[in-house]
Image (cartoon, helix red, strand yellow):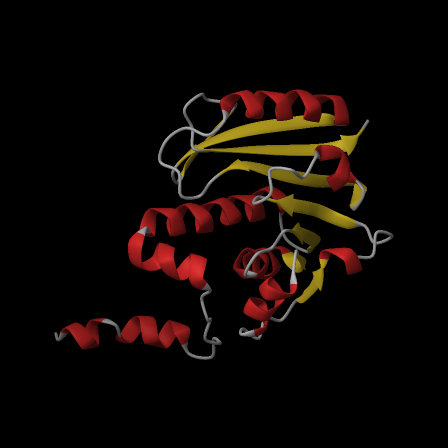
Length: 199
């Protein structure tokens, strides 16, 4: 079997799917740091499993929109919030089936079953609760997809304490590359905080 023929099953799977234009950041991972890309995809897939199906999801700081598309495909519906026009231009290169908005135009009266923010450390637990239903989930991430050394463990403990004050139920997870374990583990390159039921 030729090398070209080996890809025939993949071509069959991809029929009918739309082409995706990668932005500079994700393209760089693809060519120079495949582990970072694997981390990125794994962490969003983890979020979808925590949220479940048939849910409305708000994705804060959505960057190029690929994470939003994963949430949309797996959870039912996702809305992405971009920080600036440049991010919206990158998103516009792809014909995503979901909606994207600039941060300042986000309707704060809308409530979602889950709010996800994996790429902005400055987003606080309190800010995220503005958009979630009473029984919804807030998933915050701390770290860098590209780091192979530990993220800021002190900051992770601060977020855990803040989350415990904000939510009735709070779960923490640590990731070492694509391996995700419950609890805060020092030396991990990424941390997740999943909160529910605001106090």
